[in-house]
Amino acid sequence: MARKNGPTISQEDLYPQSDEPTRQDLDDARLLDLDAEQESPFLRGQKRVSVRRGSLPKKTVTRLTWTLIVLVVMFLGSVSVAAVYHYGERSWRFRVDSSDHIEITGLENVTRSQVMEVIGGDIGRNIFFVPMAQRKKQLEQIPWVESASVMRFVPNRLKIEIHERTPVAFARVGSRILLVDGVGTLMELPNKKKYSFPVILGMNSGEPFSTRLPRMRIYQSVLSQLDSGGAHYSQDLSEVDLSDPDDVKVLTNNPEGEVLIHLGSSNYLDRYKVYVGHVREWRQQFDKVESVDLRYDRQIIVNPDLNGAIKQSPLSRSAAKAAMAAGVKPAALTTRLMTNSKAPAPRLVATPEKKRTVKAWHRKPARKKTWMAKIGLSKRYLRPATQAARAAKKPSPSIAKEQEHP
Image (tube, rainbow, N blue to C red; front, side, top):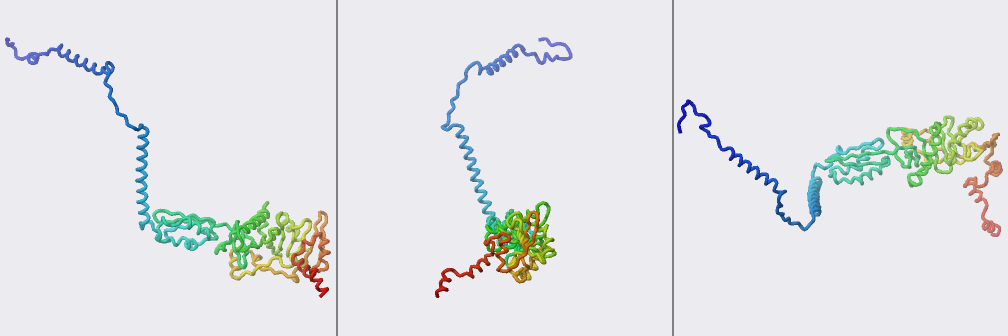
């Protein structure tokens, strides 16, 4: 091959061109093979692979798996709770060290010392071993406590909430004066608080609540009627005698003199208005008005209580002083023991629709029957003591026979 004469050698001489048609044919063959592999699932069937099935259904296996997981979680939780309980039972961190870790709220008339008498025994005890229900019951036995709640706070705090009772009246029990709430619970007088209640008579500390509760309902009915319509007549009362539910008696706190009023068992407001409207007239007619009986229709008996309207045990000096400090009216602190010689003569004031007449009668045995006939009363209105005295004067038939034939 002859060498070309020239200064340079061309690129074509150094790198001869390859056979392009041959390479292109190879590429086309490869592309055909790839297309054949991609289209093979659609052109020919593949061999199926056999799968071995288990003995349990798939849903059952899933349920068993979740059940096992739940059991494992519960077991781990029980172990954790037991470990925590064991730690809390023996750790000093959960011990009530002193009274500073006991919080008490709601105290007004109940003292902290009364509460600590119940809860103080738990100082030094583990907080988880304090009997909450028992402490609640013991706290509610304090007379002033209506309800109580005891709560524990981790690590070592106790919180006590006290709800006190609401007094509605004073109550004279023996030689003491106490406070009483709406259901008849008796409470001691507070040290630094005053009330403006009347004093209830006819209660004792030994009677059951089944007897005391109806009396308190009568008392609340009397006050609600006297205060209805904005009259506020209850502010004039010093005492309310509930010893006889069929004859409620109230004592008015009048500067001109206290008056005992018999209101019966119903229509308290209407009967009290009769007293308010005629008391001045009665004071002008009679020398002294100490009691008025308003239980009967169309007639009023002035000063009927000759044998003593109220017989009470005298108050001690300390009890009277404490009662006055609590707001008891002075008229309710006196002890009234009336006798026949000092009592004014009773008067019958007949009140027809058109004319009012005043009739006087004397306490002579010979004229009792005449007086009873005038006002239309029968023998059953006589006092039991009078009936017994009359029966005592007449011997029985057997005794009279023996006296005739000794």
